[in-house]
Image (tube, rainbow, N blue to C red):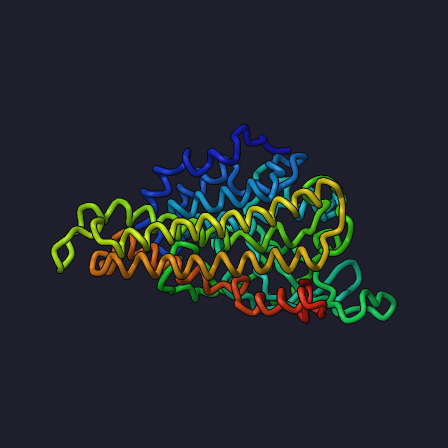
Length: 384
């Protein structure tokens, strides 16, 4: 249906490095990625990492996708964030053929955007009436489709799991949602993460996907725990920003004279902080990728992902965020006044990193949830 990307996904950050770095200031100023960057990202397959091969996607593993996100974030966190949020192409594995044809059958690769805070969906003849107000919808200005999460009002003849909300994904056309210009942030300014409102929009059944149903394309990675394809992208991005901060310190320290005489690189404090920071990022990365490999293996073997493994997964994400925050703050402090001027690398990394770790997926509450599971208690959160 579409020209498949011939690129190894891992090459995308290196291939687009020049365009990404040249777009940073423009993206900050206009509060969204420039159109020319979008075009190059689309052409090289950055938005179809998780899309099935049958519609021209990469159908990549979770480990592969997380590496792409992290390496993009080392160049620019806003670019990585938009790429992460646009990679909802796995919905093609969940929709029926009629729904896939509606989204992918127009002859041009669709751009998607999504939001995780649920709206509401009321069943009606032939589909659903969807309404809601979704905040922080990154990349929505250029999206052809808004993939909205919504809770379905459950019909009496379809009780579902006791106590579990019926969460589904709904694909809405450009004409069905309104963008509110609300994005004026300190960091990740280029993501264009504006609000979206939808009022009583009809979505046919063919454009609604259950998250708990067996996928129509029952292949790797869709045969695994579907939410895992979405959640950890932000954590990989935080680690990419933290690594970029460490790399910038290595570049800055040998030439920066401190108020106390020695060069920054000659101070024992700098040397110790650098080594500890790099080790912490590497360890957090390996933990996140280790759990991702386990999830990939479960999808490959079609084995259920236990609540214990989901708890490990969430704890690894929150750990990555905590480490990222600590490393970025430590590097920012060492750089002193060199990090405070707008337009400098560390100033931008600090702003972007501090916003990225504020994502709800990084909440410290997930440490508590993981601890509850380890103690044999109910996790206490829906869709966990």
